[in-house]
Amino acid sequence: MDHRDRKPSCAAEALWGIRTIIVNGKSIGISGLCDAIIDVQDLNLIAKEDIKSALLERVSCHNYIPETLRTAYADAFF
Image 1: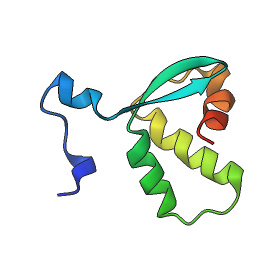
Image 2: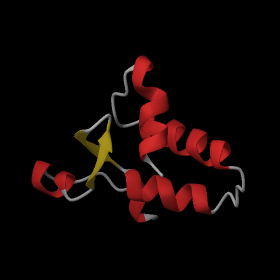
Image 3: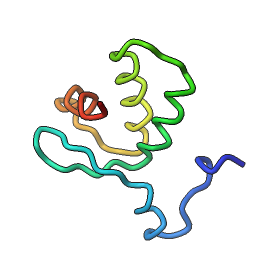
Image 4: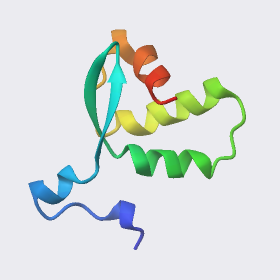
């Protein structure tokens, strides 16, 4: 079983998977960002916009990202 398929057994363990990014000058916790980066690297995408879009799609599954801030979040991934 891939480690990314495993659900955290407790809240403390879940916190280890949270990474901080800066969106519009504010620190935001993102769950699953490291796993999303690994997944997107495996896609061998070249265009920056394609990479941003793929990261946003994967991260959005586990994090609330306001529609009005999607571009700012995608930019923050770089």
